[in-house]
Length: 93
Image (tube, rainbow, N blue to C red; front, side, top):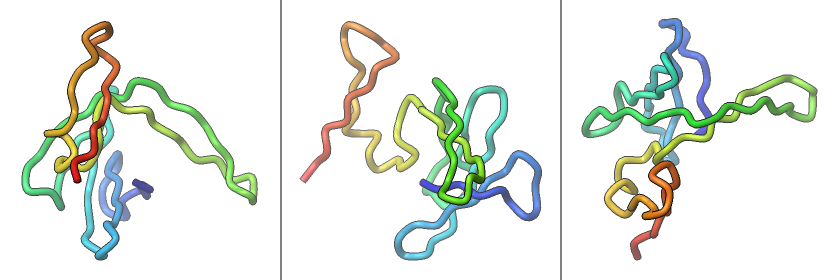
């Protein structure tokens, strides 16, 4: 997801799905939380943060999180037995 700062709330970010549905997230205390746009709310831990640059050399942040932002994918995720912080996605067909 590409998250853009909310025009209304500090620490809130917005995104849109392919069908133009608006999603809202809040990032605080090392967690990203879905606020609206999904059937329920959920939190995901931010494991690491990187800084990237676009072709105009404008900075943007890249977050590595512990689970997908799309809750429909969460049922197909299982923790790796060797490391509880590594998640493997098995996409359902």
